Length: 84
Image (cartoon, rainbow, N blue to C red; front, side):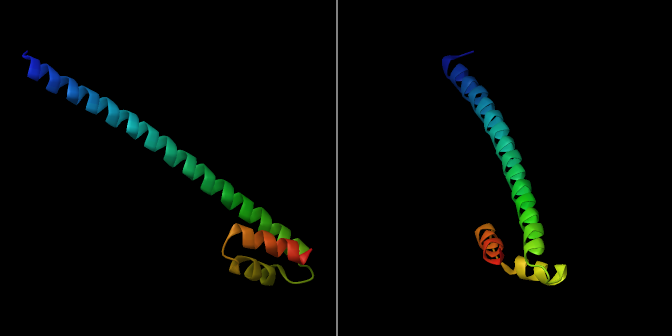
């Protein structure tokens, strides 16, 4: 094989290796993002349960409506703190 042919061949081997590594890194990132979303969902559910208990004697349905109107986790934490 000629020198230019070897260079091109090496280029494509390196490219394939880099694409594989990037794909593995991307897969790992998506897994971590998925875990983070699940954890945030669990936190939100726990906050909802806390809010329902703290806002008694209001009904669970009414408390949930109020809680889920808040747009983000900090606002939901503030709701729980305000009720207590």
